[in-house]
Length: 311
Image: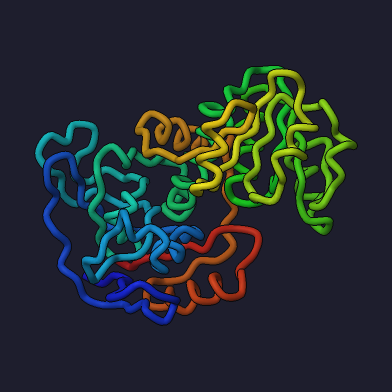
């Protein structure tokens, strides 16, 4: 089997497409023949060593977390999934390895793929969908009829968060680049403001502010809240976790691989409630070049980079 892996932490130059031998699934695990995988910013952050306290120093390490494919084998105790099932899901941070022809994952992080989704569409869902759902519903405690503001409403998580909030009966506004306000309007958002907006113009209008872009100061977000409102950030760091522990409206989300949440996200995508844009699709042999361009130049813009296999 082939996969993208690395033998030391570092920049994109450490990535290699190499042969590897997938391990048989252990208890509670499934082995999946990958059909498509999706890139996320955390991929290169982890490869760079940002989470080495969790990922350790055992090499080579695989790259990539979000995938869709077909179950090849199941381990002891697996009950929800069977060989031949079409699935989508994600690996753990420590395991990784989705940019490959085969990937091993815990059953709890994998669910059946809706039949009307392509493998490419399905691979784009797990991280952005789980993060958005848990930010808006779990941490944000959104109720029908409330008002939500999504900072960075056209990013992967931001777009999904806006769609989930709208589906839950909320009024949704957001911020984005000045050249993309028409896209936000097409989603059904109102009001729409440009990055760098004056929060005083939106004083007291929202029950929930979700900062997906990590660019909205907490004091600015507080001005936008109604009494009892909540702020949710999606970029955990020592500082944001400490701030979240203090009294006040700010909460930081650490996304968890909750099976029921992933099921909900997958079904919402199947219904068309969540639609994640795909900007570019490349085969596995061309993926290192595409991943390097995405990391260094931010291209492609406007959607996900999807890596496909021919197996």
